[in-house]
Length: 61
Image (cartoon, rainbow, N blue to C red; front, side):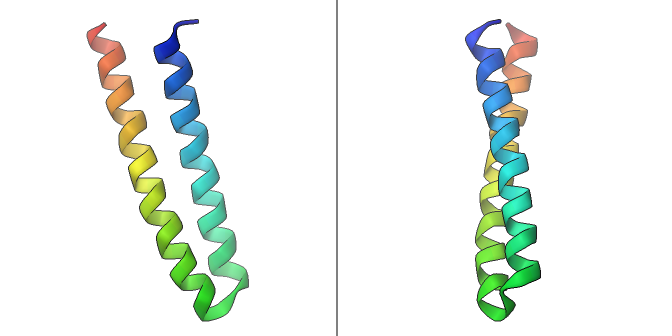
């Protein structure tokens, strides 16, 4: 398994983790949770973009 594959897997795991954290904070904490949820969703988009770019790089490799 190459390092690029490991990086893709880590980025995908971070995406899933931030998605679950965002959904759970939105569901449980009221107004504060909605603000926290928005922060988690911004992180998720970043992790998702990183995973996508790493997958593109792996196709070029």
